[in-house]
Amino acid sequence: MSEIRYDPLKNSYSVVASERRRRLEDFTLQNNNDIHDDASFCPFCGDDAAKLYEIYRMNEENTSNWTTKVVPNKYPLFGIKGNVDRAGKGYYDCINGIGAHEIIIDSNRHGDILSGYTQKEITNLFIAYKYRILDLINDTRLKYFIGIKNIGIRAGALINHPHSQLIAMPIVPQKIQDIIAIASEHYSKKCRCLTCDILEQEYRTGDRVVNENHDFIALVPYSSSAFEVNIYPKYHSASYEHISDNAIPQLAELVRDIFIRYDILLDTPSISMAIRTSPPTANRESDNITFKNIDKSYHWSIELKPIITHYSVFEKVTGVEINPVAPEESCRYLKEVVII
Image (cartoon, rainbow, N blue to C red):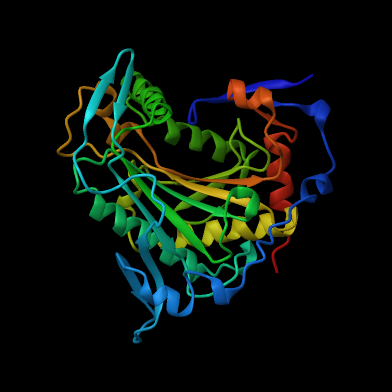
């Protein structure tokens, strides 16, 4: 019989459908991530890259050669110019799309496979995320920031060059508000962070812990999609942008470790990655009481999801994911991967 699981950290349900259990090799079918593009036509390579307007840049040590740069998205979801205008249209509300949409070019190399990422490249990516958020956060029109990365054509990546995105919005999405409310309610009752409590429980049982290092822990969430992994700082921290520069290489080390495990276990799947951080509250008007203790109640994380199943109509309509592999089994498979 299937099992319906709820995870308060994500405010989501999933169905662990044991009767739909499949062989591990079934998940590696149709993982065709070849985008078939040529570096000579890549907008992030060579002369084309040199023409891009640079918002932020990192160079190789003691050289003028770039390693990571941030540029505006050519087709942005949100634009930085203008004021935030809100209008009511009968029962509907409308806000103009003020915000920011930036592209982080992770590396100056062409080619985009999981095992090809170096720890230095991933470190540079997370440094870029940090300092771009710290810059944009000064704009009080912006209420929420999300860093995302899509690898492989099934995840929506259309350019076979390591790149990521940073999006700033003039609203806090409802799902994020709901998660914050759950964390705030837990804190108001127990004066403890919900994530810290759950991490202590996960660490104690070990059933879903894939790997860890000094500052971070990677685990398969109790309610999750197939082979999903979330990474959390072991210490309490609400906002990603407050990560210390010394801790970023450790985060990169664990992300790269999971990348390689995915690559070996699932035959180079497409994946999506997202930074889940708290919305800023400084110099921003809000009557939302759940935001008042957000620094103590919320805990940031990195979400990694391989795209290896197709969403059904049931999942799209209900928002409840069907997972044919129990999270504990996903964890076991990932832990058994031998990394040479």
